[in-house]
Amino acid sequence: MATAIDIRKLSSTDLIGEFEKMGEPKFRAKQVYEWLWKKSARSFDEMTNLSKDLRVKLNEQFAILPVNETLTQKSKDGTVKLGMRLHDNFLVEGVMIPDDDRSTACVSSQVGCSLSCNFCATGFLKRERNLDASEIYDQVVLLNKHATEHSGRPLTNIVYMGMGEPLLNYDNVMQSIRLITGQDGLGMAQKRITVSTSGIARGIIRMADEDMNFNLALSLHAPNNEKRDQIMDINRSNRLEDVIAALKYFYDKTGNKITFEYILFDHFNDSIEDADELIALTQQVPSFVNLIEYNNVEGVTLRRAKPERRDTFLNHLRKHGVSAAVRRSRGKDIDAACGQLANKNK
Ligand code: SAH
Ligand code: SF4
Image (cartoon, rainbow, N blue to C red; front, side):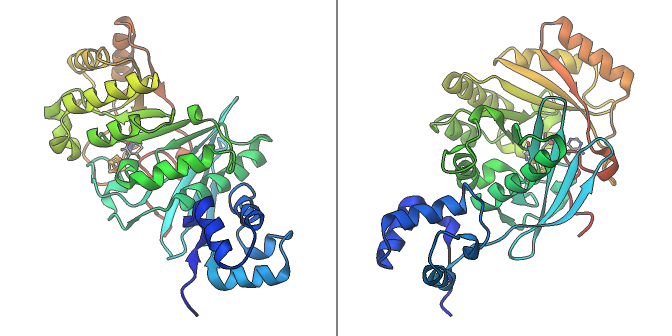
């Protein structure tokens, strides 16, 4: 059999072209496109408004590469972590985090990560490959089912904070956002999406120039170049000044405030002097600060900051007019927190 075309790599225009070649009318292509995206069909046999003959033909020429939920873990607090198997057997993880008035999906953009930040469990994994837009989309569809099951309503927010660096899989990540927010897809609001990056200045500028309006978070984690170099290699090629300039550009283009994510590490970046440096950084671009409680990772010497130091740090930021909050860690009992997604159960 000739290798089948991965049908979800085709745009709707491409699909119409393929259908023309097969002697099928345009509206058939549109029906199939709707099945693939809006109705998340995972086989041609589900496409009940097509003739049997056409379904046979489609099965011969095209493939729908599946993402299958293989492991479902539910936390006491309602958080659900999914292990999802890709067609070539790699495994990625995604998390659904329910809250009173919202539920958030945290999705992966790569299998592993090439950046190896030295506090992050995902960084210890080899980067195996980028995810396709359809594979990111499928994570959202699967997590959406859990959101609806849990709270009776669909996902309200999506964060690209699972495994991988989204800006190193730029095209697929942008395409996935288009599909998730498009009327042909899930129709979610772009404002409900946040892309998190370790700080790749050129990628941030490129995103700002897209005709889109999602939110951006920077994994800052240290208030100056010297400290950041020690924990995030990416800082050696993307200096903080350049990253901040890119963030300003993003803000100017989109009007969306930047979220600074700042993990508090015990006696590494949690002093008042660190807070003062962080305050100075935040003053350069409209932003808020999420202070993150570190989930200790085996083999990492950095540890979670003490609660007293965390509170002093937070109060100091607030006293200086910085809008800041501590982000509660969810799903602790199932290792579902950010930076813990590392395929323990492979
Ligand atoms: N690669 C992107 C997105 C995925 S990481 C990025 O780095 O932004 C999602 C967030 O979890 C990042 O802010 C990351 O720094 C943080 N993180 C990594 N390991 C963590 C850990 N063990 N505890 C808490 N947060 C962690
Ligand atoms: Fe990769 Fe982000 Fe983890 Fe760094 S923090 S290793 S960029 S996933």
